[in-house]
Amino acid sequence: MSSPKVINEKPMSLSEVKVEIENIKKRDKELGFRTQKTDEYLQHFVQNDTKKLSDSLHKLEIARLKEEHIAKIADLLPKSMEDLKGILQGYTLTVTKENMKKIVDEVNKFLEKA
Image (cartoon, rainbow, N blue to C red; front, side, top):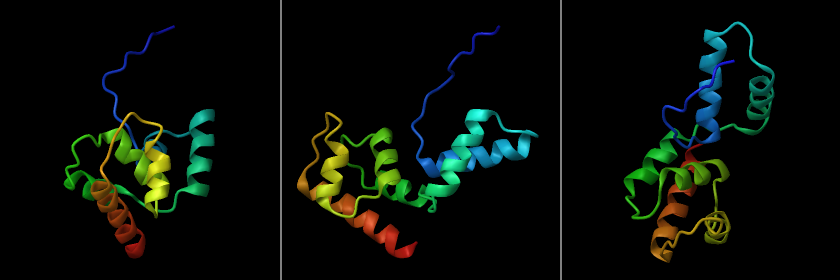
């Protein structure tokens, strides 16, 4: 039995995972059990491609906002500051109200376009 090594680790939003599974479907004949279950879940729950939202959140250049935070925001799409606070309270992250307002505004712009 082989022992796989992790080459790199990068947080991904659910829409990015959906795209990667589509690429795996094209490459392989048959999906594994877990990949198939994940694909079923993503087909049912993920409608938007949030790549543009992730890019716009990166452009805000908020000091402590990391890739994992952006992926979680892109997954849950908070529409209000209270929703965003609920998402970010699981992290040891302090974001000013001004920056939270910028994030919520970007999410709402993305939802209007979608």
